[in-house]
Image (tube, rainbow, N blue to C red):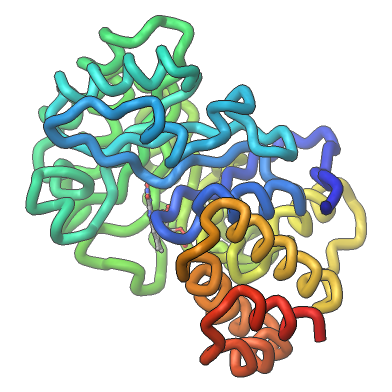
Length: 326
Ligand SMILES: Cc1cc2nc3c(=O)[nH]c(=O)nc-3n(C[C@H](O)[C@H](O)[C@H](O)COP(=O)(O)O)c2cc1C
């Protein structure tokens, strides 16, 4: 078992691991927060439709709940809700709190067509008054000690309502806002418009976290400079370079900030596979997650490309383990 290796240097900088459905699931959050550098992480979105989720469902999305809302390395995990029915979202949020959740984030950024078709995610950014209504309804329903935050894109088709939406989230009663610096129609096309995060941070009175396209230390320095924020959320870059947050924290502490050699990454790969098997053995989940991750890691590490080629056609966990041991 890997030891917890979280960096504990005092730093005014706050790094948050992004919620990414199908990517930063519990095993990945466990691994990346062990490697270090992250101050916080967020669960994949929990979709709220007409039902009220059971305890088992909340725990499936966020097993951290059973560990005091912390990953094994002790990093706090926020649970994210996605939906459009404010009353049912409030009912679900209250249940989640009853089961132990202690911080809730609301998703106003998901671009998925099925989600948007049901009025969830980024489509809500067309109607700031609905955004306000959702945030206010949840804020009023939740006990005062439960922090409520929001995460938004810059808009749906364009950025004309960016400031209004940010104000709606702040005035609705959120105590923090993360901004993914793109509209829905911009998808993931570069560039992320970091200066827009600065505009938003200047317009609202709650702390703002800047997000989008931080893939290396230089990107981190640029997003800090352009957004003016000292809180940064990292998503895909953290999956491609698992020690990116650790590098950033070391840099901020005036220490050497070299990337981990592949030999160290190889240990993380084995550990991640073990975590996936522990979560769900007996189906293709561990194999699929490993292959997906190698497919991303190979953008930063050529060695991961060779490993990906070796495991690509393997079907069983035993075969994959044998290959990882080589
Ligand atoms: C595969 C994938 C799944 C995502 N799922 C979520 C999600 O569940 N909730 C959310 O708020 N954002 C989600 N996002 C958006 C990320 O949190 C983040 O805002 C975006 O990837 C930009 O940051 P990055 O450039 O550092 O990756 C997802 C992004 C990706 C690529």
